[in-house]
Image (tube, rainbow over all chains, first blue to last red; front, top):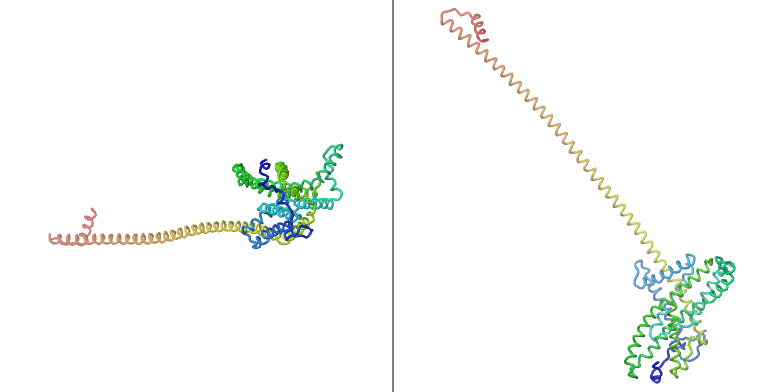
Amino acid sequence: MATEEHSEGLAFHPMDQFIVKPLFGGDEVGVLTVTNVTLWMAIAVLGIVALFVLGTRGRAVIPSRTQSVAELAYGFVHKMVEDVAGHDAVKFFPYIFTLFIFIVFSNFLGLLPKAFTPTSHIAVTAFLALAVFLTVTIVGFVKHGLHFLGLFWVSSAPLPLRPVLALIEVISYFVRPVSHSIRLAGNMMAGHAVIKVFAAFAPLVLISGVGIAVTPLSILAITAIYGLEILVAFIQAYVFTILTCVYLKDALHPAH
Amino acid sequence: MANTTHTAADTATEAVGHAAEAAGHAAQSAGMPQLDTSTFANQIFWLVVALIVIYFVLSRIALPRIGGVLADRQRTITSDIAAAEDLKAKAVEAEKAYNQALTDARGEAARIVAEARAEIQKDLDAATAKADAEISAKAAESARRIDEIRAGAVESVKAVANDTAAALVSSLGGAADDKAIAAAVAERMKG
């Protein structure tokens, strides 16, 4: 790496963008402290209100542009819930839509320069994933009682295999929230960190002759990764939501 | 997708590690801020606030509104299609009625034409018959007059012949016997 030679000029702080800091001075981050997390979540909330409340206030049969975007998002998630989790899952639609739209807004707002991405934090995604996990488990037990445990008992497998499969199923069930949360936070964090690393190489031309080659390359790389990140921002929100639907389907129809 | 991004994550983490090792002054931020548990409570608190706000705004205002608009649109489209079907049926009906009226009018016209023709024919026939009768009456009259004239002429000729015969007989010195003369003239005129 070129860093060895130019460490005095290049500053590598790829993780600094993830630091949670108070907005109005001070170092302590208490529970109620207004931080950059608060700011960017508030921006996301305002964006959501602007799109879904102000954008649809015309209630027009022939929609305006913002209203058709809102309708598109509604139709997209509604169809996903109905197709994946079944018709009786539609009553969970507002809950799933809330998750989806919060993640989408956080992911895309996080792509703005200088922005903070709440969904790149494991605390946030783990909370979301645990909420899904608990909801799904409670719904499963409420709707099916102990029959819900049939989810782990693969009745189509040969009898001697069933206890082994049950163990695997239980483990995989409890790993769900882990993978569910790390997938989202990991993707967000990785993309942003990679962009930052390339960005650190960009001013190399000011320091050394090698920069003539490195700077355009790193700018090109930032552009490419940014394009990929736009894709990832949507896909990860989609993946999180569709997995929520799949888990919900398991809770509503636990039969294998 | 997940696999590639996972690899990206690995590379990123590696790069981050390298960078952190290389840049000495970055040491204080070498740890991932994500693992700084002191900020967890704060993040989760604001997350819960944000989610509750979003959930209530969406479930109370936005989603019923959008659902209503979509249902309205569906209904409008359905009723418009039904109305269009209705109008189409009406148009077909109207066309049928128009064609029916046209056919009726044609039939009526043909009937009137036939009637008029028959009437004219009748008038014509009557006129022809009347003319024929008049002509035949006139012809008969003419024939009668011709006969009369002819008879008159024969009579005249007979009288002249009688007179002439009587004159001839008397000029020859004979006594003119009218009866004998008339018989002789009649005899002659037959031949």
